[in-house]
Image (cartoon, rainbow over all chains, first blue to last red; front, side):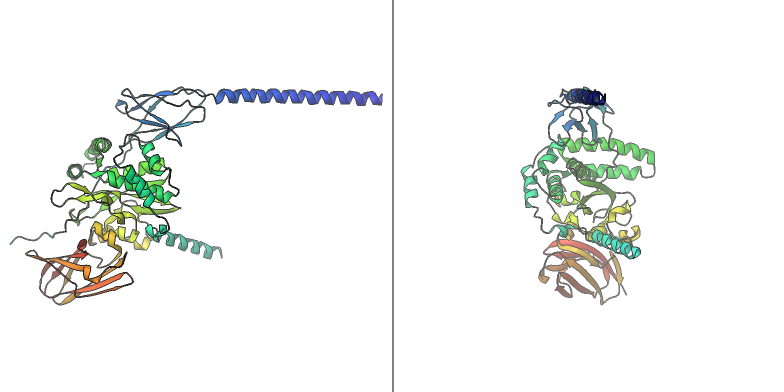
Length: 138
Length: 340
C-alpha cells in the first residue's frame, strides 16, 4: 500500500513536471510568435505638413543613423528602409521644431504637422569701422 | 562639517564656471575638426541631420564635434546686411506696439529661414539657430542666447531692444560661450558687403571678456559669478571692443568705461591681459579730435607675463576718440575729453 502510494506520487510528479514543461513551452512559443509579429519589418509612408499645408523638403531620418527620406512636392514620403516596432523616426525642417515618432505595431502611415520654432530673429553686425563721436558742427 | 563640504563644493563649481573657456581644451587639437568643416564647404542646408552626421561622426570628443559644426557655420553662412537693416528698422518702428512687433517677427522669421535655407544668408539668430540645430542632431547640449551686443556702429548708449544672439554649449558638464555671427566675418569697409573672415577668438571665449560687449537677457548665460555681473547701465558705459580684441586679449581690465573727462597733463591708465606675447612696438594709440587723426605710441608701456599696461598723458584740451591698435589691428575705443 505504502509502495503503491509512493509509485502514484512519482507518477503524479512526473506528469506534473511534464505538464508544467508543456505549458512553459506553449507560453514561450506564444511569446515568441508575438515577438516575431512585432519585429516584422514593414514599409512606412507618410505625409508631413506645416501651418500652410503639405511641406515639401522635410527630412525624415531613422534616429541614430543617416538613413532617411525627404518629402516630395506633395509633402509625402516613403521611408527607404523597412522599419520595425520600436524604431524612431526624426522629422525635421529648418525653422521648425524637430519631432520624433516611435513606430508601433499599428504604424503604417504617419501624418504629422511640424510647428514653427517661435524664436525671435534679431541681429547686430560686428564691424571694424572705428567708433566716431557725434560732434557739434561749428 | 556638512556646511564646509557644501561651501567647498560651491567654491569648486564657481571656479569651474569662471574658467569655462578654450584653455580647458589645450590638449585637444581642433585641426581635424576644422579640416572636416573645410572639406564640407559648400554643402547645402536641405538635410541638416545628414550634414551634422558628416561633420561629427569621425570625431571622438564633444568639443571636437561642436568645433566642426561651429566652424562649418562660420565658414559657410553669410551675414545678410540688408535683412539686418530691414529688421532693425521695423523693430524700432513697432517697439511700443507689442502686437505689431509680434506680427512683424512672425513674418520676418518665415522670410529669414527661407533665405537661410536657399541662399545660406542670415542674421545673428539664424547663425545661433543653425549651430543649435546641428548640435542637437549630434546629441550635443547647446542653447541660443538672446541679448544685447555692443558694436561701434550701433547707438551704443541707448540700446533699447535686444539686438544680438549667440550660443552656449555644454562640454564635459561645463557651459561655454561662443558667437558664430561675429566670428564669421565683417562687412568690407569699402563695399559694405559681407566678407568671410573667421575669427577664432569668439570660440569658447573668456566670459569676462565676452561680458564687455554681450549682455544676455537670461542671467544664467553670463557664466560669471553674481558679483561680476554688470548692471545694464554699466554695460552701456563700457568701452567699444572690436572683433580683434578677441584675437589678442584674454581680459580687458582698464579703463572700464568708454567716456572720461580729465584735466590737461593728466594721464589715463590702460591695462589688458594678452593671449600671447606681443611686441611693445606694435602697441599704438589712434587719436581723432574731430579735425584730424593720427597714431602715436603711448607715453609709457610695459609688457610682463602677458600683462600689458601703459599710460598716456593728454596735454591739449579737446575731445578725443582714442583707439587702441595692436599690430595695426583695431582693438578698442575710448573717448577722452580734456578740459580745464
